[in-house]
Amino acid sequence: MGVVSAFGTDVDCFYNKLLDGQSGVSLIDRFDTSSLPVKFAGQIRSFPEEERMDEKIISYLDPCWRYCLVAGTNALEHANLGPEVLKAMDRSRIGVLMGSSMGGMTMFSSGVDDFSRGGGYKQMSPFFIPCSVTNMGAALLASHLNLTGPAYSISTACSTGNSCLHAAANHIKEGEVEVMLAGGTDSPVLPCVIGGFSACRALSQRNSEPQRASRPWDKERDGFVLGEGSAALIMESLEHARKRGASIIVEYLGGALTCDAYHMTDPRPDGMGIYSCILKSLEDSGVSPEEVNYINAHATSTLAGDLIEVNAIKKVFKDTSEIKMNGTKSMIGHCLGAAGAIEAIATIKAITTSWLHPTINQDNLEPEVTIDTIPKSKQEHEVHVAISNSFGFGGQNSVVVFAPFIL
Image 1 (cartoon, helix red, strand yellow):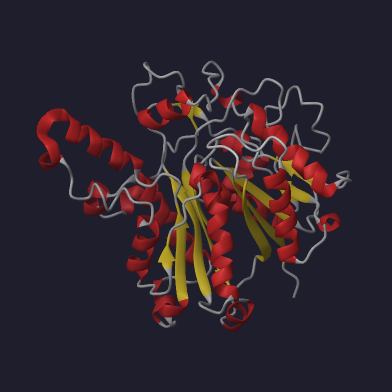
Image 2: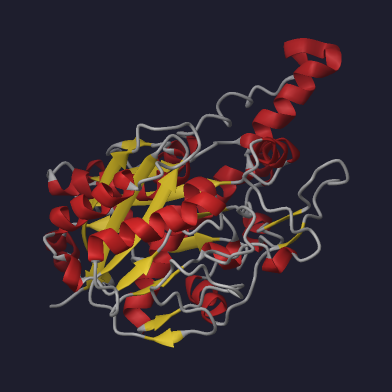
């Protein structure tokens, strides 16, 4: 596994900060926010790996893809699939599926500015198009490592990460590949993105208390907090993993994708899209609702979305007395297309450590939320089966299911 987030680039450090209930949200310091209604984000303030990158690459590569390259290469190293090991493998049987909600928005934004200043296309970078398109993360990783299996991206708004994990697993199940590098990446902390989300009233405006702004299920929530980052996971067939002596972390059981078919931005009020997605994910995984005892919720801290998700969960599981549920976004914000992959790592760490991170900033819980949301501090909990939810604009629903790996 590999991660780049407001908590750095080390997976264990990332999860330990979640367990400690720390907040990675801060006032934006990379551009002037005086004209914006939102002045904070879950921004990446330190990225030392950049210092080891080729200066030429840094000069043209959008931060979105820099994060992706680091998350992807770290995941491969973590799985003992470094460059020397890969050279001895059939790389046509290894694929890359790294999605993005927005692609290279820094490059896109600066390119539009260059064009608009009066110089026209002659002022634009030749990298404007290739570094803006959403498939570039997968393409860069594949070309960097000469991985010649399927390499592409999926863009399903904020459910992108889960969509990529689900599709990657299906490539393996169909026998097309043995290994997939899968996840998501986004770097949207930009004036135009904050302005756009503010225009559709999606973001919290708690500027006086940035670290308390993301507050899933709390009565005083007022929108989500924008985050950024990347995460990649190595998904591998059991036979291939055993043959090469890989250290297997958890088992991916299955997943599902559905669409609300309702609205551009709002979730379907009756939650039927989410409900059916959870049910289909359990069916695909071959497990019953009674076996699930941990949920990493989408939980963005929006007025409508939080309760619609909870009500759908209660409808699926009925008796939720044994279920624990938390919201990773309360600490790092909403990383858009990277969120599902980042939260999959949090889910996997919950399984392997038997410790669940808290959901911070829950001062006044909505009465409809009768599930244990771990509101104060971390809890020890042996996870039997876990689901991780991600939902996105356009009614895009995705759920992935994990369990401990048993020899």
